[in-house]
Image (tube, rainbow, N blue to C red; front, side, top):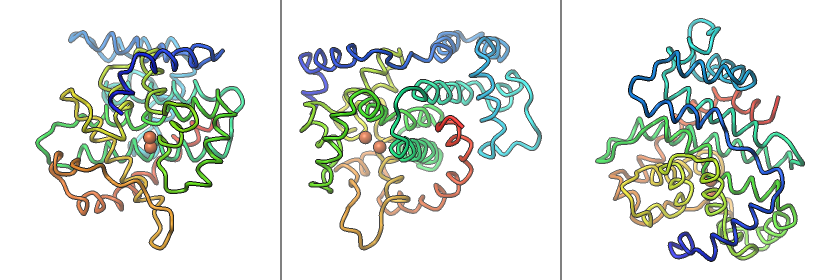
Length: 299
Ligand SMILES: [Fe+2]
Ligand SMILES: [Fe+2]
């Protein structure tokens, strides 16, 4: 797997496939501008608000998300600047990323049923990763807001397959019927020769996302293979597990959820019981996320 992730032959192949897709979603421009400005320590809420306001569609979405039940603010936020001051620079940056990604994948031929399941899962992992970042007392420091973005984007490669490679997408779905307990990345490799982690990482590079986010996308199924100090892939891996455990596992089902990769719980300093114990909290958080879902579905 590590080999595949760094194999330049494979990367070239995926680049060709992704490069050959016309109207690939545009990079979230506002997001990358904000990132640039945030690297300057003198950046103010005013600077960030000014950038967001350049894009009225994104501004409207940021306001809607800030005013959603998720933040539970006592009174209505009316300006982007107020939003930045109240929920914070990092949180707004991530709202912009969410809004941009929803926008990027809202056009073209979409499999509505897949979209629904996809965004529910992605948002679940975003909320789960953020929750775990706050909850886990570990030797690692977790950045809760980066965790949210990484959760939102971790499976974005699947979205690319669904929208831009519909024939392969259909083949992968057929194969899943025959092998219901095989992880998606294995099915994808069988059909395509590469997987959604690799496609997502490539899209992340094109979008000039931060390296930590790209690593989280690349390694979310195998966090122990990442060689950098980045803790995000671990957090997303556990968030992915917790989301499946909370929403997709049924006691007597023949379909099992992908377990936590070996060594991860010890490495992070938690236990499976502690992880599973977060399911109720996750359900509660998720209950407040309807506005995110509506936006994902372009409502
Ligand atoms: Fe995945
Ligand atoms: Fe996932």
